Image 1 (tube, rainbow, N blue to C red):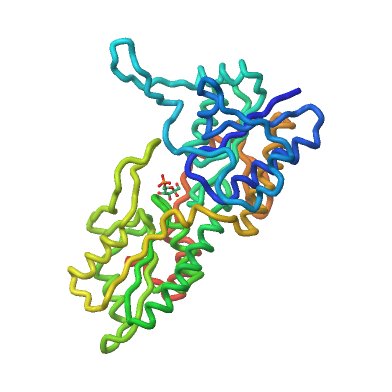
Image 2: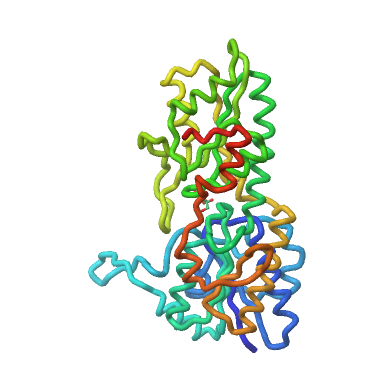
Length: 363
Ligand code: F6P
């Protein structure tokens, strides 16, 4: 029997279970492949005793409709810079990839399918360079991986954000208020941009287009007449003002990033200080965007990614990431996929179309 180890790493995302199910279903059509899962990314493999689970059709039955991941996940820790206690008590960070690959081999694993975002795929690439056959599956609600048209989880996050946005519109209208809704997106404003277009926002603030507070104020005031009017703003958690006002940060987040959150309150204060007369209310959507049932589109791409990842393993096409490009499922080298970040293009069609709809980006 050949053994595959599946791991889900980084922040969770609707559709992870559909990928796992796709891998297992496709593998079960082969006679000589066994699928295993590692709990909480590769921690389950690294720990002693290991925490691994045999995944068969029964284990994955019906899980494509559920949110989260049956394997659990973590966005803390990185085997490429692992803190290790030295004999003198000091802590030194070491690269545990060679050890990890030895361990995978000693446990009899022939292939790893690593489902995760850019951080997890950097680990995939490191394991591959160390001689481990690895296949990657791109995951993130932020849609910030450049080599795939969409990552699964993104459409679900946009739907959740749009549903909330729609609710905020009616209450903004009733009270003549300015509503600021903060969505996820630390470096890329995709969720904010799609939600702004879907919901019909007046203002959309994203990390790629630093905003000018005066332009934001101008747009808000243009929507009020004698104190009557309302405005709905979508702001990505990583948005910043042109004058360098930094996003609210909430401390450390583990692997490679600082935890963000609360930029809607910063903007609200800025508007008040600049003399905005209207009443302002803030909403942070936070992790509601990450949880829950995946929408149909995400279930489809996640399921196909799972099947395709298994097929790459069968073909022996390692060091590759499954992707969706121009409505077709294909694969690209992981190295290429992680070398280019998927920012919203401020001059791109989508931003221009949003401007055509009257949405201000504060630029
Ligand atoms: O990377 C995906 C993401 O959803 C970011 O948009 C967000 O900043 C981060 O995860 C939040 O992570 P955590 O779950 O650790 O708060």
